[in-house]
Image 1 (spheres, rainbow, N blue to C red):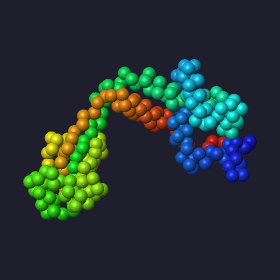
Image 2: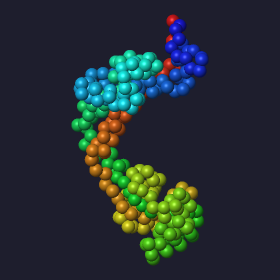
Image 3: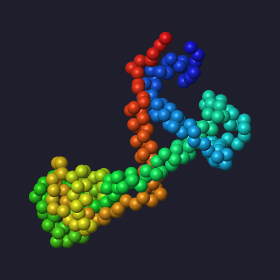
Image 4: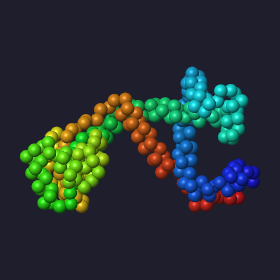
Length: 246
């Protein structure tokens, strides 16, 4: 069998590579790339898009002559068409996302919105209930005391920011804290609550409702594409325990 790879003076045949692909967990990534390439096979870039992307590639890799491009191709074991497919892949995937899921983004965003809303909140966590109770009453008497008390008493990394956390998506905190925050009004101080091993004092500072702007639209497209890709891998890909030989 012919040699296809040489690394540090050691040669590998195609047969040698199969167990290595499994060992380094590259097969799932390979399957993902194959499925993606099949999906975008009919997606084309315009001549101007192809030219612009090729020029960016040459600029990035400091290839100023055709000889340098060919030298790069030889080193990678690629031909010119393979290079063009590689460097236009991201744009073709983006076009595929738009063509396939653009009409579904609004409904998907509505479905996801409750998880995408963001919060800014203040947090103090301590181990002893009596300490938490004392701190709660001190803050209740003087709302401005929260930051200083958090820096002095809180036993998490939030002490470094005076207890202030965020903006973070509503599902980022501990589920119990997230549940508390979704029922609060801005500025509301929540009495000491046990969360796991801690007693926490929480105050909601700001609730930021997610909006379907352009970055969010792109995120929704990315999520829909990734969901399709994961489902396709589950349904269409099988990893054999050992290669089939004739």
